[in-house]
Length: 219
Image 1 (spheres, rainbow, N blue to C red):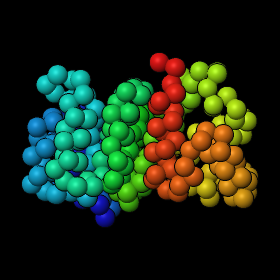
Image 2 (image 1 turned 135 degrees about the vertical axis):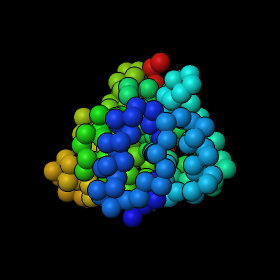
Image 3 (image 1 turned 180 degrees about the vertical axis):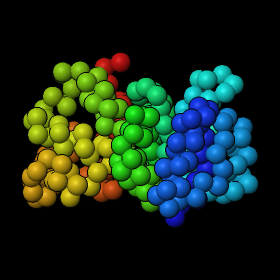
Image 4 (image 1 turned 30 degrees about the vertical axis):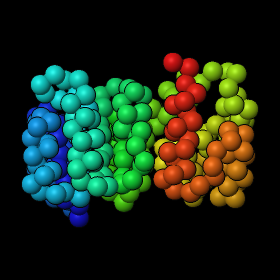
């Protein structure tokens, strides 16, 4: 069971998320509608994880994201799962620009409709992993100029890279692509060699890949 603070200004979505979380055996210790209330709830309830919308009152810009970043500064390694209505790679970049300590997630709200995927992402973030929405990864990959190192990758290596950037481990990548885990390891090694990345495991590997995609984006 996870103790969750939920921040979402849309009343119906907030109620729906709370219902999903409760039915899956978690405890929603606070469900709030603005960034200030989010900060107070975390300070008072000390949850296991925060789920927050990016855009919240009063300005409906990035108040939820900024509140989450501030809370991670005050509460070391606080896992945060950020929800966004649209693909905004700048928000993902801002969220992931730190050292990666503690779980981090950036999902589109459409992903909540896939309850099992949403709950899997929640559990992985709570466990300290990095989880990025596949659509965000797709956009980042599309932004890559053709003359950059990414062009050296084969189509299969690009598929592996995309799943790696989502935070999936080798076993899950193998299952998704219907290949052996040994093949995933081979493709991963080629990717890191071609992109001159440190072939570290786990969260650091994800952050290294995301950093490469951000730095080499076309815009």
